[in-house]
Image (cartoon, rainbow, N blue to C red):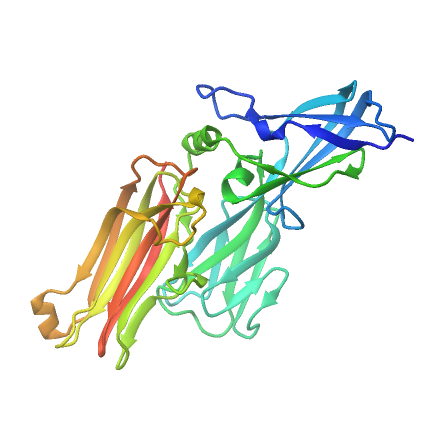
Amino acid sequence: MKRISWIFTTLAALTFAATVQAEVPSLINYQGRLTDKAGTPVNGAVDVVLRVYDAKTEGKKVYEETISQVSVVNGVYSFGYGEEGKTVKRAAEVVAVVDGEAKVFNYATEHKPLLMDVQLSDGTYTWGSSSGPSDAVQFIGSINAELGNVTAIYIQNAPAKDTIINTVYHYHEEGIIGALSQNKECWQELTINGKSLSPRERLVSVPFALYSQFSAFANTKRIIHPSFISSAGSSAVYSTPIHGSGPTGTGSGEHYYVIDGSIRDSFTLNYKFRLRSSPQHNPRIVIELKRYNFRNGDNRLESGSSIIQRIDSGELTSAQKRTNEMVVWENRKKIKIPNYDPYTFKYFFRIEIDHYSNTHTSLDLFYLTNEK
């Protein structure tokens, strides 16, 4: 019986089977060498299962493809992959922006079928198709995974007006580009004739391939669910207002929304915030679009980042301060990121909220829509 051992691969020289001028690259060329227990080169055909994980050991599987009957001649084999397999991708979308009266919210997800634990959340209650509800007396959900339908149901009371209900789910996408673009690291593992080879080898994606995929992809108009990171580093789904208000407490809070791979270089930002001053203090909200180079190994958002555009800076007028009225900003702005380069940069919104004693400052709505 022959024992297959992994002796040599040329994966370090990853090559897509396309030129820069061609359409979106689809295949990655891979070469290796197989020998039996005695070191004799193998001849014949083998079945290969290729899996990609997000970590060198263990980790989550993000791609899988089967390549049948790969020819091996004098121990040398080669094949192309990246087109026929499936990437496991994460999606987060807004189910509804609540009107304050309805208690049942139906939504058709952009992708289907739905995989794994499908989550619904409004910032107070959560429900998962596998993990169950946080409060079954008030909030439950249901899904049709095959059709991509999700339903959020409030049992007793309708949620407050402007509450955002979100869904987070996973789905399959054809090809490997999604796996390369959404994961910071990708590690390849081969299984040949049922035997898994180790160690895993790291995949280094080709910049023009990722960029071409982004450029060629035309999304329909779609609400994209925001997930914010606070200045303290904690992460949370945005569903309730980010605010600073009340009789006591002063200071400035910073929050960041990192734009994920489902947004391209052109999109529309929708937001609403409220301000009310006190005679002594004038609160404000600042929204900026920034970027940072995540390839340099420093993933702190404000370290080495540069501002692309100041979106808004809300501050009350003298008359509004005197009347102590609540002022509402509601806006919808089309944004195009210049020199868009998702391979090198991460793009994010910085939201600064200044609040003081006896003032009110809140960001009530913040979401993006893709434009074709």
